[in-house]
Image (cartoon, rainbow, N blue to C red; front, side, top):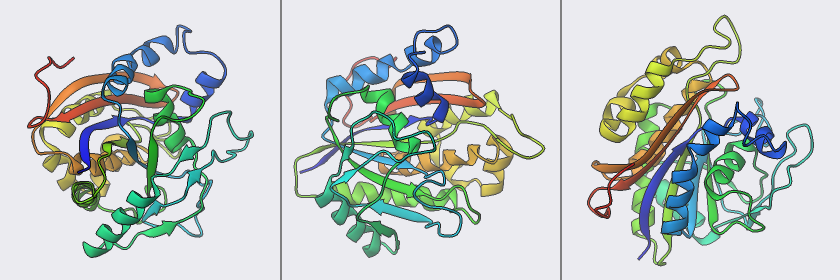
Amino acid sequence: MAKLIGGLGTSHVPSIAAAIDKGLRDTPDWKPFFDGYIPGQDWVKEHKPDVAVVIFNDHGNSFFLDKVPTFAVGCAEEYRPVDEGWGPRAIPPFRGAVDFSWHFIDTLVENRFDPMICQEIEVDHGIQVPMELFWGRPDQWPVRVVPIFVNVIQYPIPLPSRCYEMGRVLRQAIESYPGDERFVVLGTGGLSHQLQGARAGFVNPPADEAFLRDIATDPDKLAAMSREQYVEMFGSEGAELMMWLVMRGAMDRDVVVRHKHYFVPASMTGAGMIVMENKATSSPAVAA
């Protein structure tokens, strides 16, 4: 039987990709950020997941404002890096977990979700950066991926509670899947930032720190918040944080935080990471 082994949360800031590509990892501006991910990378190496379900948003690359699905799920054989304006990055394509993708889509429909189904789509930094932050730059990705696209760009965006509910359906799909794969779920986006309007440059470190605490200890509180509260607390683009609720909804109510990291600013963004395991199945190792 398939097994969910952990939930990861991380920012997917595009400047992180630029820092990696330009060899800036160990410069004074970036080293504290990247060093904070080393425990997360070690966790992935130790636990060796087979499939990564990644929740992220497209940034006007594969979907544009004229056609934006609220939720979309990829079921392709592979997902190639999209050209975001300066050429595709030199990273390998992501191999798709096709059979599970179809199983998940069917489970969503059984639970009254109606996702867009993508049998061919390219993916941007929303998935590229999280995968690099945890798996580095391999010749071939050691995990297969299931991309879940969430519209947090074009209003009306989904309710945080709906994202949390989708996470519960994802857990149901994993537990009913007949394979023996080990799954990890990545919720991506944020933390606080706003790129336009009167609050351009806005970051809210106290709210970010509280979010990193509450996503583990009080996810129901975060799920009950309104969309307007997310924008007010985290900025118009910081509303991406509701995508972490899909990941959190797939986890047990009680979790163990293995690692947590916060850095501000990464470009114009508060950036963060968390690694969680279900308490009921977690090893007794001390959390970092």
